[in-house]
Amino acid sequence: MPLTMLIWPLPALLTWALAWGVFLGLRAAGLGAVAAFVLALLVSGLPAWTGRTPWRRVFMLAGFPLSLLASGAAGGLPAWAWLLPLALLLALYPLNTWRDAPLFPTPATALRGLAGQAPLPDGARMVDAGCGLGAGLKALHGEYPQARIQGLEWSWPLAALCALRCRFAQVRRADIWAADWSGYDLVYLFQRPESMPWAMDKAASELRPGSWLVSLEFEASGWAPQGRLQNVDGKPVWLYQAPFRRR
Ligand SMILES: C[S@@+](CC[C@H](N)C(=O)[O-])C[C@H]1O[C@@H](n2cnc3c(N)ncnc32)[C@H](O)[C@@H]1O
Image (cartoon, helix red, strand yellow):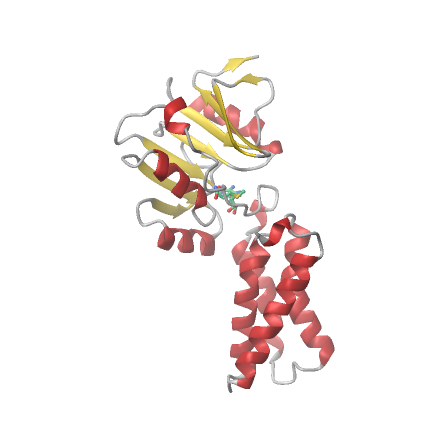
């Protein structure tokens, strides 16, 4: 079960326990305090990425260093080491993405049937705008195995890990709102409800007629979808084909 499905604050408690486990294990194995601290932070950074809100991410990541400080077990750490949690959080989530969506992966079956409702020729260009760790890219690749798929992701560690996981795609670090969408036949988004008006405005002015904007979970209110998929409870997929029609 994904950590985010657990009742809060269980995800935070499990993240802290994981960090402590790694820290104590590495110390017992003879690793220095700084190296064990950094590795424990990095390991607990993975679940902390999935926190549902910015504050939850902060709690999940900060619990271990704060409890380490309070426990007095941090004796061997230099003062600068305490800046590492902040640096890690900012690297994972640069400030401008805090108003956008945190990391939630596309469920593996959510896009099943997309190619049937939005057929595209081999070699079509598509993008997962905010590709996270690549779950959406994998789902797109499953539907359109011959497509040229790109991923744009603002957080550089996520972009780097995603590029490693999705060799079939071209992944780069970019701001999806500053990127040019005009060359794509399909733009896939899993962002936030608040982002949908910007996304529709941008797509309406940049996408060529016949291209698709596909949104997981969040509908663009006021616009008529050409199609809808419902493979996963609570995660409908909304399909809008340019030129978009008002309801
Ligand atoms: C809900 S997750 C979706 C991840 C991926 N699309 C998937 O479905 O598996 C949203 C992702 O968008 C990224 N993001 C948020 N704002 C962004 C922006 N302005 N530019 C690029 N990526 C952004 C976040 O870092 C996060 O990884």
